[in-house]
Image 1: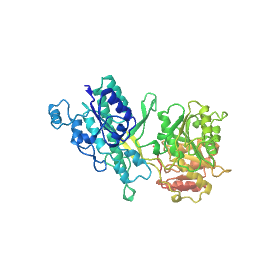
Image 2: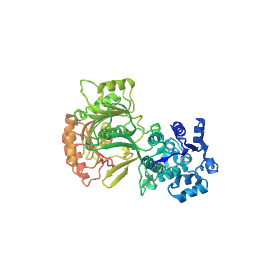
Image 3: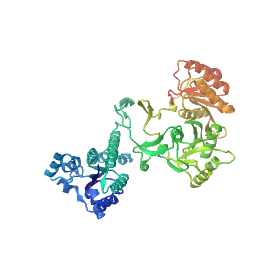
Image 4: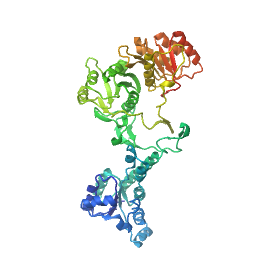
Length: 540
């Protein structure tokens, strides 16, 4: 059913596009405008005829604006059923006008709490009360009332009015109502999340997590994807609500694409994995990821050296992979990447930033290579870790902050050298980002002992010794003198025997197997050093 708009109530925090929209309503359709405080001033300053909401309610705004639209004169005009005679008689009896359109958006709660140093008092004052009530009332009575939240809705509504001679269609009102209810739900979720009940665990005494009985998640559409993991699967990418550009956390979801064709589903997964690994390091670091596993990683005094060492970890697997850096890409690094003799091919490159000439060189290198700027990598990955299963959702805190080098325990007769310790720490950090069962072989450069690099990776095997043997095969001759990290304990000594035979000199693993003594004895027989971390890093 078509419904004319004769009277509109406007109360917005974000006034983008408001004046042009309101002017169209007045000049084209003769709509009467009623507005609250700041919204009324903006419309009046633009020369539009507008009444203050107090003229409708007969009551002024009070309590510093906390109460201005919470009044029967507002809600009767919104909620009255136009096809119910007793409702219309009630409006007439009390001289209450019908309201046909609500234009409202809410106090910027998400933006406020995202600001560094925001106080609880500031957060509370940005919890909107009247706005959600008006939006909900208008949406509930969509048979007669339209509700618009932003300039996208303004545009759609004006097109609908133009197509229907100044009336709104029922289809449009339903669509706007659905958006309105979703908007309010998201708003409430963000408020609940701020107070620690939704979206983040509440840490209580003893470091335990107080999980909410019900979890509501809020995500916004970032972009459509050509397809999912495979061409027959449809896909779209959402980013976490509240992840704003002005207060952004550096991550793949918030990265700015500077060049190349659109990202794919698999690209985004790999970019996330690569960036989360490379942010583990404070030294200049480079990571190559393929199929969600690192096939190369390195730290070095310079980014270009880190890149060369990382790529050489497994050049065959690196072809067509994802590159990530924890420092801005300079000209030397860009030149090394595009070196025509190396015949390299990468899908994506992500870094905190690029030197202008480096960016231009990379853009000219390949038309389709995706170049992304993440911003400075500060802190660990944010939020919770979610995994969808059929009929449910697995939620856990992220695997960060558990490692303490000072708590590592040497369990063998031989102590590791300092160079081995450094290489073991590097290998351990890489290992936590490899699919389990995970084995990482790493070395230190003799000429530049401050450089560490991966020489072999064994990932995602059902048997741990198979992962060991794959890593050894990948490393080739470079396995001699390397160190080994295992994401979980060795169930049998065969892992140690295989590593020692290949030339590994030191091992780090969590410990905790019933056969730990056998693995320790094997290390002592072969003259290897072994350390227990007491921490496991499964990545399924």
